[in-house]
Image 1 (cartoon, rainbow, N blue to C red):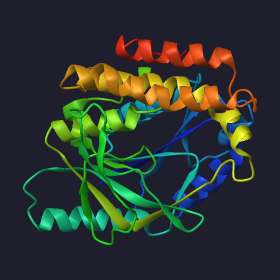
Image 2: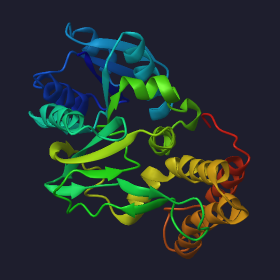
Image 3: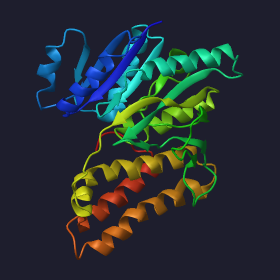
Image 4: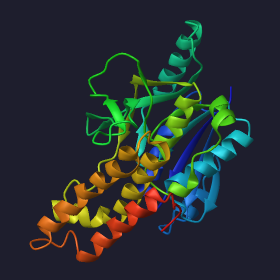
Length: 304
């Protein structure tokens, strides 16, 4: 069995080093493939010195473009399982072993659907961090597309329909059936879209709570205004891609148009209320959010 870890990185050299060290300790891992998305912090030089890594250097095409390249390359090189992660998560020593035990247990039990993706549990400063969910909702225009979110208190293996690209363990047959992540999303929702496509293709997705990964916490010392200023450039992609998902998969007019507009207003209203007192938002940002919504419902993707 060939197991390839795919790590996508951009300008986080010290975190990348920590993640690679954690992967080197995984006993049944075949190889590590690093996708360097145009880092400018010396990542390319460090990677060139690592003789045990497979490395692809490319321009910064976002997380979605990184995972597109990584999964495509791992698949073409014959990987049976592809273990995907960003550079800010660190698998514990037995994480892969726990995922493989669940694969073996599911096969021994004769699961009624093909097991396609397994998601480990993430911990941030010792506390459970979870975005996994059990239902897609493309019918209720005032609800989230992520239905029945996990609480983090789960102790048993739980069937899910969606997870982040922070540790999913993907069977080769999933790639054969549904292809590659949508690289034009750049960041945000590429993992949600990929999981949805796997789910619709009939694959089973499982959350494995005893397979543990640690996740780095960013902006821990920043104020609300500082944190929002640093993350603001990402909001375009978040609003646009959620609008794309709702428009592309929505089952009614309300989901295709209203849900994403309400989501965008969740940023517009705080921006209007805080602009007189804070520099977290500026008037030009309102036009950015407006454009993001309309680009999304027009399904106009790509790097901005």
